[in-house]
Image (tube, rainbow, N blue to C red; front, side, top):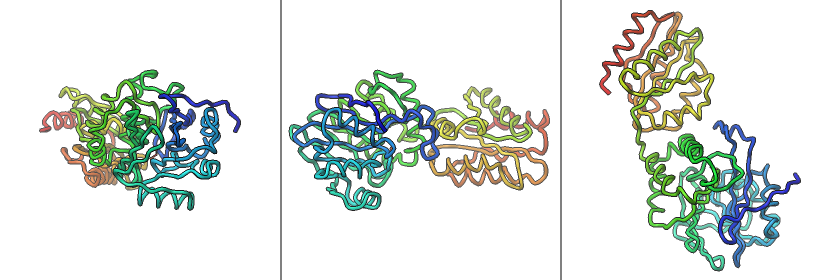
Length: 392
Ligand code: FEO
């Protein structure tokens, strides 16, 4: 598609040549309310080097930005940090133009993944500690396995003190300005937390290993694979990753529920009020109205979770089953939970919710709250008393 996109110089002879996906609202199930970007970087040195490509739908934007500073056929080296197609999607197209370029990827996982997707190209597999000279600059490769795929890798340029971090430290955020200090920091940090919660939460140990591996590097800029480039708030995002990867949680409860005829909703409201009476802040999410990716971002750093569902066809509500499936995959650490819900006759849902919470690794701190039909005032008072008496 025709476009007028240009490269953005982010350091002397280093350009952002990625693509902005303004309209993205769903990234494999992750609700991306602010869009995203697929960041690629072009280094003009003796060997012209491209770090990552973009989602295939954005190959024209990528090639236009590259062409605004150099003929893409002159690219000598392509670094593929990550096989996932939001970064490698246009690899075959770029390699088809830059016919002699070598493609750097991790061994064996990057090599296997790229070969499976794009066939035999001119791959050069690397391992931890490998580096190449591209002229005045060196590129050092640091594999970050399972952060968040087996092949994931970051690249450090010591002469520039730039870390090309791919998925790490990024966020799904479409912006016209490329740097952290040119955008709203509060929004960036929220989206970075949401990214960590939805993509990296299961990989805290791997994130800590990566932070350790990067710990001795002097970093002036973190050139991420999504969202903004960090140049002002580098310590801030590194500190956030230290906290997030540690599994630290706050005294806060997240109440998540669905309701058919308001009974489960009334119990949810009672739970919120009871925790508030204990001076523990509460969040209240009817799953019909808030995307799961936002809810899990809140759960991620909240110590307590209450999940409610009425019974329908002898089951929990499908919306709650979906939520529990999602949270189980993310394997949150250090969380405590309980189940609640209403029913007309069978009443199986609450035990099903509790079983799924246990399977997801939550410590159950309160016996199932299960109420037939509409809760009475006495029953709500009893719930409140139980929460006030909980040893937390
Ligand atoms: Fe941004 Fe794991 O790809």
